[in-house]
Length: 527
Image 1 (cartoon, rainbow, N blue to C red):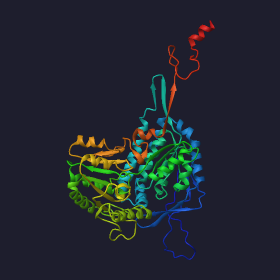
Image 2: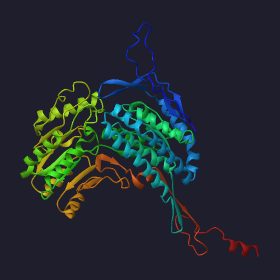
Image 3: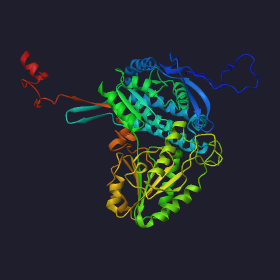
């Protein structure tokens, strides 16, 4: 059993003569998880992890280097043959131990995510961590029941681990999106190098601790903290990396695709979204608007699945806007450690500046009518990256706030006149990740959902299904995660053409159509 010791108290490096009650310095981490051990990074620079509610430093971590990435890729490549050869039953047994080690750390994960993401404590525990644990267990059981071999005629078709996987994950729901990649990759027989977001790396250190406790062979899982420009680029272009799986912005996806093309890597991308919730004229308006607002505000609007556009019949827009404003007013923005809080801060100063700029642009461009919230901080919240939940009405579908992903608690209400026009608006962005349709007629709702150019559509409030494929159309991504599709993202397919027997006809690219000598032929020749 591998036993890890991670700093839990800040190092006391106060200068001589400092007051004894001076504020302690945050923990200073100097290592990466490589080859089954905490390995010192050669990074000269440091990255500061900030609590978005207080704007204070939580910790510093190494600004990982290309050398760190190289060491991790080499460790993963060295471990791959052994890990891929472990029988599925034994491999999934080890991964169940990973899930158990994560469950033991559930409270620590939740506290860490509240601290580095700003997620309210209850949501961090129930959704960020609870859903992650359920997803982790589901990924393992999906692999355990998967058919890795099948006969197709005279061929044996086998699915094998694709190799070394680089898993690059974002900051918004960091544990869930990490588990969604790493567990299927490991279950498939791949070895992994994980690059978490440098904004929220502390949960990833805790995950490395859980994986180490499960006693996976050294090098099977590695974790390197650093920026995308340094560590991300080094991994995507590394000759020993076979698969790259990224969740991030569409801009990052374009860059990764271009970099990975140099070595013809398999690249899976889960990118941005400008998702629409379409309320049809026979829907329960109050229920559908309330559900849309609630979903849009999850994680303070910082999700790729967010329904940031609400489409309603034009003659009911005023009623819908009033319902949305009343619903939004019932959510409490504040300290994420307060049990009464529904909405915490945005994750960083950069995120705060970006969302505020979009709100101001919505006001200044005239692409919509501000009806709730607006630019500026909520009253009484002068410290922390807080924004006011905001609603625009009469939004032009082609305006900035009608087209671009804001990634904050901003809802654009768009009126429409008839169903075909509404569907054109839904599909009228470069994205196609998630959508919703609401109707009093289930068959009608399903029919409209089929017209969405989106990878995921909720019909009358249908719930998330971890067994169903998840991914986007258009610039929302390439490939699918979750369920068997998520496992197959890390598998290669091999066809083994087997002998057909004495009556089999040789076909295919042959210069001379002669079969190998059969035992019966050999016996006759010997006689």
